[in-house]
View 1 (cartoon, rainbow, N blue to C red):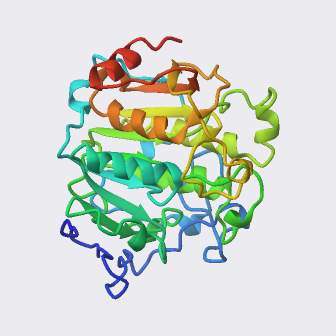
View 2: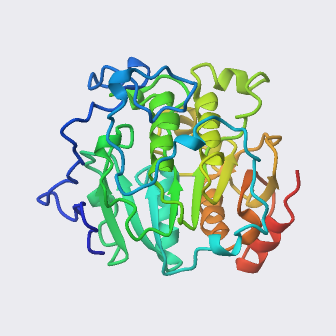
View 3: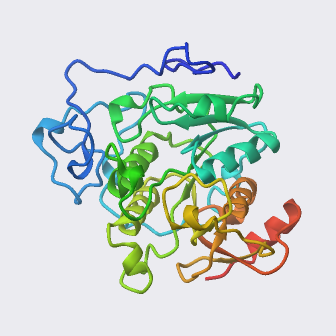
Length: 347
């Protein structure tokens, strides 16, 4: 196991201590999203995107990662360019094998695959699981010394350990929940808390010298007034995913955003229609990419995980929002083919 950084505990076995939350004597509790989170806070934290939620004066002392600079100047919304030029810092954004990658949502369907593929490609992985996770130790048993599993609940800023980003070269955010009410919403795990609050807190926790922040959202985030997206967005999942994109775009971080269509292939971890149908991609392995939200294709979890890992070493993916879907045929077979695919993506 990779040694745990200062301020964190690695739970290689159930007997080890869970991550100690950061505390501050004068700090108010963090936000509770849409009143669906457990009753742990009476006001909204400044972790919310400014202008979306009113901020109570009582929230002024919400604990933050003390070693990170203030991000107040970057919370005013998507008034910055939607993508940084590929020539501006693209080389610095490359993340080579051997680097440490933090994977948030590592126990989910996409997160499991991303973690496994990163390890196979020679990366070291810090897999982030929700506090009290019972599946993570068994899920990643036998993964080897390149993997460290840590706990944190990203919905609450005071539960983000001070050392979470220590030594991290890149972040892959695969957090998410179901679009419609399901068992997965239990405990305040709905779209606002998961797709906006938690993702936004993770973005703000990332240091400015991070090489890359890869964020997985969804097709349809800019088409919520059109079918079928208007139905998918009935409970706000696409709205909140788009809001998290805006936080990332305004953060100053080097980023890549992936917008997959309806996910097929296992592992099936959600309580949704895809899990019920056990949808598979079959012989559809070829990928179609676009730099605008215009595709309406299914996306294999396997292909998405491959794309995430490959994007870390391709300069043309920096500062891009990449929509993707699968079509009949074979997918990219090596790194050169992936680079050519990413380089050929058009609006």
